Image 1 (cartoon, rainbow, N blue to C red):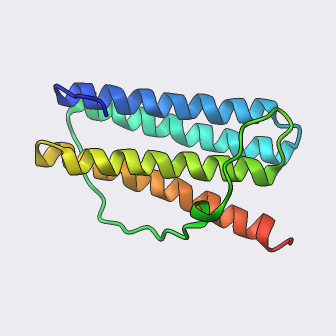
Image 2: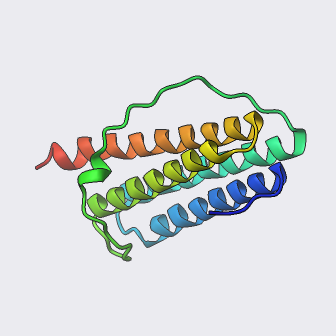
Length: 151
């Protein structure tokens, strides 16, 4: 785990993580031959860009508010086999890949929140974990609607 020396280090790490997610979803969109799937991944890339912008604003302005929300975890990704990204991957595999990526991001931010040296950092990490859990839930619901119901 990263050894952060300041809030700026943490925010830079989170900003870079969000940029990585933007690139990941953009790449999936570019490799997708299914237009509907392409739209979905471009939308997720756009949302990750919004998270990056929010984190940049927090770093610049220093203002931050924690939402008091709970997100349901359907735990679908716990029971699905890992998949590797491929240019022509089926929609089902792309959803599994995205679910697992969001789950890992959630775990990372949750672990960082537990180790945070002060309340402000803890709140930032909890907020980031909440956002990642929302993404994971969206992928789980999408998987349930378009994969499980069709089978």
